[in-house]
Amino acid sequence: MIFQDFEAFVVGLTSRFTGLPTQEIEQAVRQSLAELVDLLGTERATLIELSAAPPAVVASFSHAVGEAPLLPEGQTLDLPFYREQIKTGVPLAWNHLPHDLPEEAVAERAYVERTGFRSNLTVPIMVGGQYTCALASGTFADYRQWTPRDVAGVRTVGQLIAGALARQRAETELREVSERLQAENLYLREETLSHHDFTGIVGKTPVLRHVLDQVSLVAGTDASVLLLGETGTGKELLATAIHERSARRKQPFVKVNCAAIPAALVESELFGHERGAFTGATATRIGRFELAHEGSLLLDEIGDLPLETQAKLLRVLQDGRFERLGSTVTRHANVRVIAATNRNMEQAVAAGRFREDLYYRISAFPIHVPPLRARREDIPLLVWSFVERRQANLGRRITRIPRATMQALQANEWPGNVRELENVLERALILSPGRELVIDSVLRSTGGPVDQSMAAVERAHILAVLEQAGWRVNGTGNAAEVLGLHPNTLRFRMKRLGIRRPTSQRPGTRRAS
Image 1 (tube, one colour):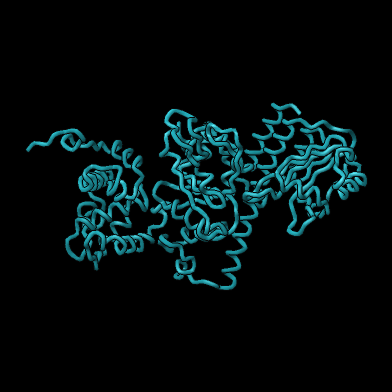
Image 2 (cartoon, rainbow, N blue to C red):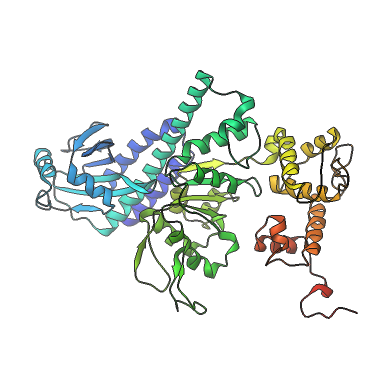
């Protein structure tokens, strides 16, 4: 196999499966197997899946040329040794069959002798945290010496095919569930929230219901989920909902904000380090993957992950193995990964800022979280929900919100989405002395946006909170905690909005008596 040709083949496959309609995926898989046979110079390529009932495996898709017998799609083969080997995740490179088979592979030896197999390469593929399928290719006319590049290439192709099929099956299942619910009239539109019972997620618009349906569907699987959406749309809430509805709900749910960790410390944060691994490593530290073992790991803002760390993350997602910094001991973690980002990942991949193979690994089931402006009908529910939740802590008792005020809130574009709405409402609660919510400093009483920009409103609100917190960004009762932001995120916003700590408030500055 010429490696440059294979790289071009993988690029072509990636382009083929990107955005491909689900009804076209199976035909694209068949075409890909035919091209793989031609590129490898073999006579047959087959996508093997483990059946629900051992010891069988299923030939889901197969392509054959020359003397190779074609395996009908869906044919079941009783090959117990072969099945168990696939489950281990270790590639099988048999150069000289049946000589390479161990004694216990009785059924496999009979199959090889019956079909005339000469050589076979089988590379297990992980789906949903387990090795449930494999991509195999073999020869019937001549013997073949498999190389490490053959193994790596077949694995990459297998991951692309398995990822596309996982997306197709998940979307098909989602469509069937939706159609069944509609046919049986199991729920009313007005009762969607109580049906889902998603804690902290407020709204009942069709676009939000669609997202919650997707969450309900994927939560019970182990598939990787990629939450895509603008800042402040509630991606972390959805990640929490996925974990709490999964079989891992009693295990840890660990969150990592990739954008808030300095690039030099990302690897240590994810995988841990041994004492003395680098300057300042005075003690052994367990990484987030180890902490999340048997549970779920949220990689928030994964689009900001450094390229050098992306390669190591891909390995962990493929086989669950990693090493702490400064250690040669390989460790294992069984983790369900949920990723989130506000970036355009396809553009990041095209620009070379994000690895293509990692992108397809984490996006087995992408969920697009809508911006607030796409579900304006939910704003009244969000407003009252936030007011009820926060007013007691702020010493307020709001019983009335004027219609013009609510219409003005619905008319706003909310570039910061739900988070921005909550910040504006918190400031309004502070400024409302009576029982009516007052937002005159943010919106006109007629309902239109005031001349004051939302950036100015945000700046004033952050300034007020900073002053109340004594300009503390870290520590107990800090401003970031009050605002519901990470300290690094608050620092970034302060820089963007031109907020600087007054000289009289800086540590070491003597106040006038």
